[in-house]
Image (tube, rainbow, N blue to C red; front, side, top):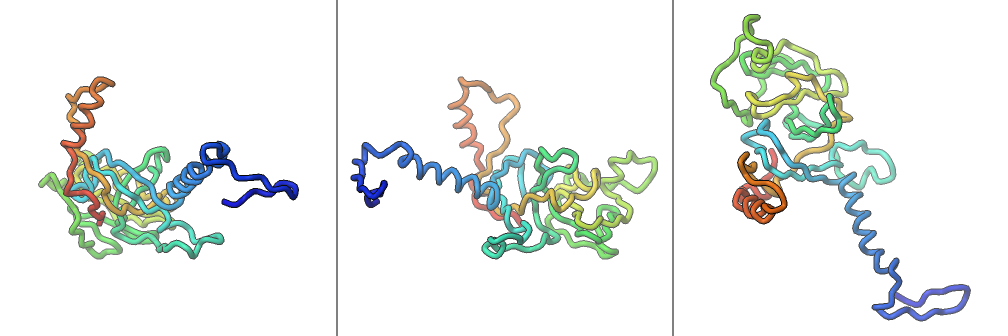
Length: 239
């Protein structure tokens, strides 16, 4: 860096060890600003706490989520980043409509304006059965559409035709027998969608319930996390 100009006079650049604190902090400050910008507008990491997306996304997976792909294309930087509309089959992270402080991950099943129905576990869109190779069923039983069956069980496998409101999306977990989703609490507003899940950057099996806790077990926790790491899932794309 060349000499600074102050009122027409030149001042010599200080030695490396004598550089003002502000100058030494500038690179760190810039890095923090970039990290905050990237987290706010570009990418964000999420940890998956539940098995609702098995066998595709497991409890304990750490995901990187693309936040700009569905963002509105407005402003001076609108054309700099690639984007597209939300599509059926996208695995997305969104703010839970009942409590926006909580983040959920599910798959897009029906788009705005479409009519979705479920009959004996088979999902149909506008009257046409939906091919779903990603679905996992842990329970072989199919609950019938019978008033004598508890509503929560009947709703799991049966759903009367319903139109998805404009600007909203019907989402479901791939683990259809263990997922709280639009079958229970309705469609998700598009404004709640945070982004599309890209890949697993780290996956660690949940810690056993009887594992020790506290400061004395920090080293043991680190060792345990490494032992439980599912290395074969590292950088696994989410599809």
